[in-house]
Image (cartoon, rainbow, N blue to C red):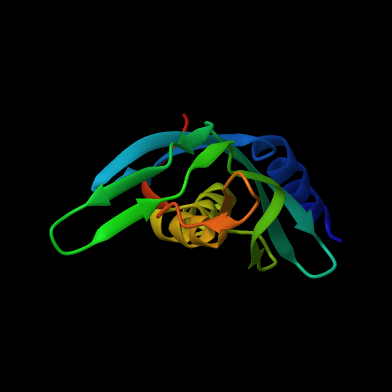
Length: 156
C-alpha cells in the first residue's frame, strides 16, 4: 500500500464512518388507506486495500408499524387485511455496495464516495430492499404490508 492509498484509507474511515440519513415510506393500513412511517439509518465506509474496494454498510431502523385486522365489503367483493402487531424494519451492518477505486488517487475522492452512497441509498434501491422485508401477523405468518419508499434524504 502506498502512502497515498493509506491517506485515502484514513480519510474515508474518518469522514465517512457514520453518515446519517432518513427515509419515509408507506404501508397499507386499511382498504385504500396508506399510512406514512419513517426510518432512520446510517452508512459507513471501509476500505479493503487488497481488492481496492470501498465497502459500504448500512444500519437502519424504522418507527414501529402496526395495523388492526380490517375487512372491506363492497358490492362485488370482500377484502380482508390481516392484523400486523407492532414491529420495526431493521437492518444491522447490512452490506449495500462494494465500489472499486483506482490508484493513483488523483481525483476528488469525496465526490467519489458521495456518488457511491447516492447510488446505493436512494428511493429505488431502498424500495427494492423493503420489498424483500417480511412483516408478520400474530401467528408469525408473512403478511404483505405493501411497503413503498417515498423519500430518501441524507442529513447534513
